[in-house]
Length: 306
Image: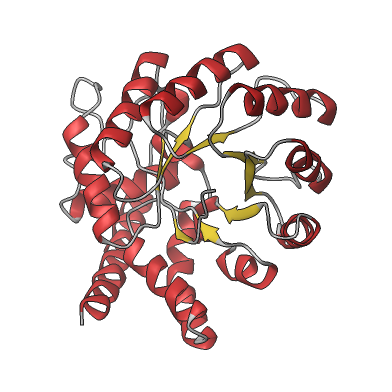
């Protein structure tokens, strides 16, 4: 069964001037991520602006992701949809493509009780054979109870991962890891802002974007090599960038795109409307922080190559 250990970035979606998808930029981004040390690649998730893509675009994104990765690292396809039926349809499509794992967020149109969500995930687990990751994306709350993850893992061998994007995820992370005897791997999202918390509570992987990947990989490697203080010191250099970016989802995506564009990975940092409109002061702050994170990433790239 698939194991996820390391940095597993979500690919962004690059748009042309007419707001169609620039597939070549996506391919370059995949190559960049793999060369920078990604343990897996993922999409189309929140960082891919999946909520602005139509079904055909999401299916095509998955095709490019699987086909261009060519088995070099595992591929996680995000297949969430508004209904059980459409989630299963996309999940089966991804499995047939050759995806290694599915990432599925609970339906977001209206809040549902835990028993309804267990039914939703049960149906998806039964419909496919590849591993499934529950993306617990409650950006301002505690998310689903650990019992939901544990119950699903007890019933379905392919329920394998929990991606936590919640407030103070540590206790839930530890409970999931310990009570499942490590069979459910925990991945931290939210740009990696709680990366140190994840290490302390048993998370095995982190899922930020790809823009500063070398820095995340360096932090992960230092920590796993027992150099925790060095890892923390390097992580703290990421914090100003993350603090600014995580004020709003659209801001986080747009600054990641700016970094990738300035590094020559993607052709444009264009966002698909509607999106935030920033004033001059915010534009300058964003550019300065992007420059800082580029310098940090290049520094880590040079160290890794030495």
